Length: 180
Image 1 (spheres, rainbow, N blue to C red):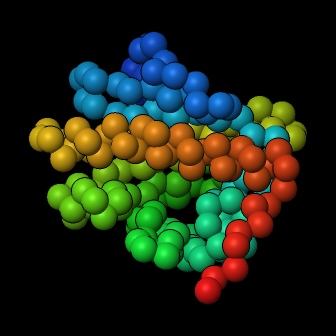
Image 2: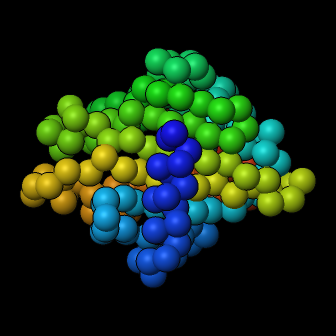
């Protein structure tokens, strides 16, 4: 059922005009019937390698941040432990090499949205043996000034996240600064 909802959001997003291309990442804001953020990027990695980059601590640390936690199962953590905050969320479901659904934490600056959470659905599809399309659809947006601000902030923030993924596969794992 989640795939059908996600697929519906994807169809709506593709019917809308892209907001912008943030480097290799295409970002689309969908306003109706349900507000969503839709992101797409093709990375130069096999489906197996991209899946591992999302579902293992070593893989996630190669592009998201140096201090991560991944427990790749429903109810497991998918977290980046930044110096001042924690990002990511809790895995709701996963279909190996096809999809990961996360109950996503908004940044601390949006406490109402962070407490309520949104749903981030990452979908993976092999384009060729050496490239993979990653699609992120973020749903669950509500009305209100804080929700509007978080929506706009995450349109940019999630594009940057996927740009980092793209860079990781274009040039190799990111060399994060050492913790102090």
